[in-house]
Image 1 (tube, one colour):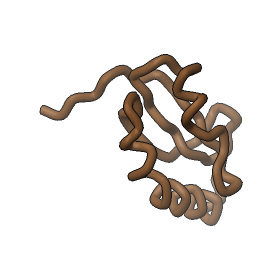
Image 2 (image 1 turned 90 degrees about the vertical axis):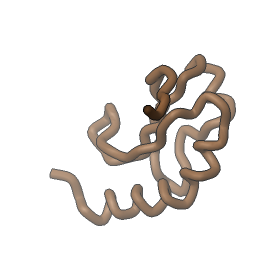
Image 3 (image 1 turned 45 degrees about the vertical axis):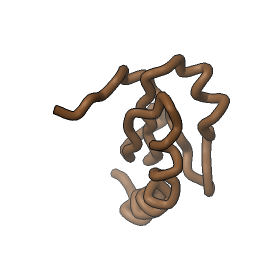
Image 4 (image 1 turned 135 degrees about the vertical axis):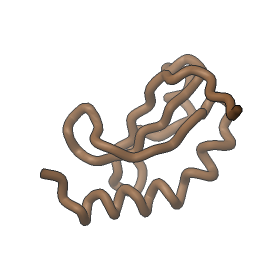
Length: 77
């Protein structure tokens, strides 16, 4: 079961950096959830090559893990 204080910490860090990350070309979304390791963290969806995006996005920030995944381009309708 997920610890609420951990998820609150992740939420706080996401809110701190989200506007900075979303301005990076290729970043389509910034969310939070359970990562592949089962721990809460930040999920960043990208529309460009994941390896290239890893050069400009952190693996972790403020002791919170970040996962980058390819989601393709997202357009509002």
